[in-house]
Amino acid sequence: MIIILKIFKWIGLFLLLFVVVLAAVVFVKKDRTFDAPYPQIHAVQDSLVIQRGKALVYGAAHCAYCHAPVEMVDAIEQGEIVPLSGGHIFDIPPAKIITPNITSDKETGIGSWPDSVLARSLRHMVGYDGRALLEFMPFQNLSDSDLTAIISYLRTVDPVKNEVPRSEWKLLGNILKAFVITPVGPSEEIQVVVKPDSSIEYGKYLAQSVANCRGCHTDRDMKTGKYVGPFYAGGFKMPCETNPELILVSPNITTDPTTGRLANWTEQEFIQRFRKGKIIKESMMPWGQFLNLSDLELKAIYRYLQSIPPVTNNTGPVLISAK
Ligand code: HEC
Ligand code: HEC
Image (cartoon, rainbow, N blue to C red; front, side):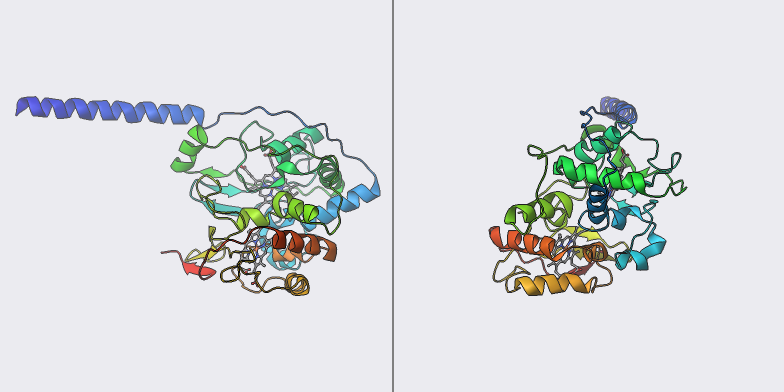
């Protein structure tokens, strides 16, 4: 009997020691930093470039959906030119992430960051302070000219002073930061220019690297952001921002005849759907920003989605109960 008790005591002590060591390692490693090259991107003052940047920021790249104050929800849903002063909250299992102010304010925004730092954040997902950015933004493969356009436009916007609170990391998040989350850089060779036209190529570029259609319409692991389902076959479950009791499930947007949302849509119907904006009020698809997509961009996206292999995947209703 006494021997058994002694063994339990030792096991207990051992477990306690293990937990203490683990906690210490997590504490030290959660703030680990990463290196990535600084892209040679320099803001310019050419008005056509700035115009292109603005069209991306408030359109396909939908920066405004995530970086504008949530109180401006009506204007955001109309795709208006709202200030990018931050504060949008994403409450996900690892953390409560709060988006930063990306106006040109020197103290609370990005006004004092060099172009190369901004470019590295967007291309290599290594933040200004060296931390790995979570995979919210899909811009790693943006062409040099589009990255230049976006940064050139950001340099022209008025500064807005808005001190955004820091993101709050939960225990799970700190463990993931210490051991799992690493920055995801470009997956292909960066092009100098991707020409805007109605080609499948341009549609692919928009759907994957700018508008994030793939990021939301592919099943992903909510903890790590990794893709776990076939591209564009839907099924990604997102906690609904406006109603915590609900979960949003992204539909399958392949042309699969039985389960694909786009099975019978003509190009015209596709464009018309985007012109209507948000219909399901709980939806987190950035319909407002996509009101600013041009016919050319929508055509390209449509043609690309028509060109990819259909996948049979019934994603069920768009809204389900969180319980
Ligand atoms: C889907 C939401 C979303 C979109 C769209 C988005 N962002 Fe972000 N952005 C975030 C989040 C979330 C963070 C914070 C990430 C983190 O701390 O891990 C962030 C961080 C940043 C940062 C700070 C990076 C750093 O070094 O700390 C910059 C700069 C930025 N975004 C610029 C942009 C620009 C420019 C666009 C449009 C071209 C854009 N974002 C579009 C969600 C978004
Ligand atoms: C932030 C996540 C997100 C992004 C980014 C996103 N979607 Fe969606 N999408 C959703 C969700 C959630 C729904 C279901 C709710 C709804 O219909 O609004 C949806 C619905 C749709 C529908 C069905 C609409 C209907 O009325 O039947 C289509 C088509 C679609 N998305 C295409 C796209 C395309 C193309 C892109 C890129 C240009 C895109 N989505 C980007 C989340 C997203």
